[in-house]
Image (cartoon, rainbow, N blue to C red; front, side):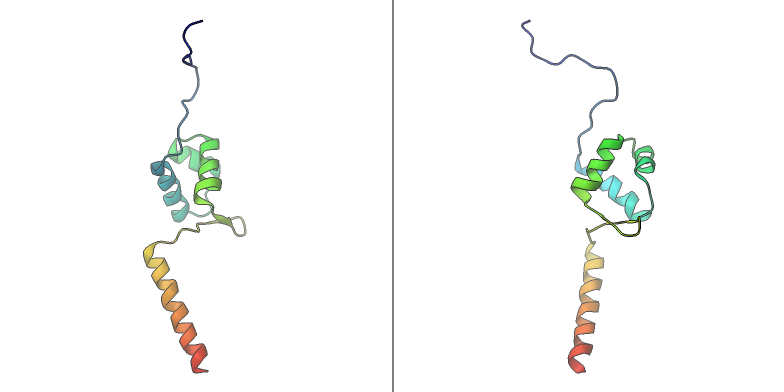
Amino acid sequence: RDDIQDEERSGRPITETIPEHSEQVRNIVVDNPYVTIEELQDQTGLSYGTVHRILSDHLKPKIVAARYVSKQLTDSQLNERVRIYKENLSRFEAG
């Protein structure tokens, strides 16, 4: 055999975990934290394994009472947390 290239195989093509797919999954989870992997699979057209890999390796959400909570905050969420923190710190220091 002279050719070392892989031959075409039947079945679903392999999809990479590209940033667009991660963003698509993240947006769905942010909109509906109760979404299942199967529902994500149906909505995105990605395989179960790809969706699971995006959730566990890339987005790394925490599961709180069977609910996905993204660790990635938007700028407005981060600013709001800082504002609340400073407000609470001022109250604490004032007594």
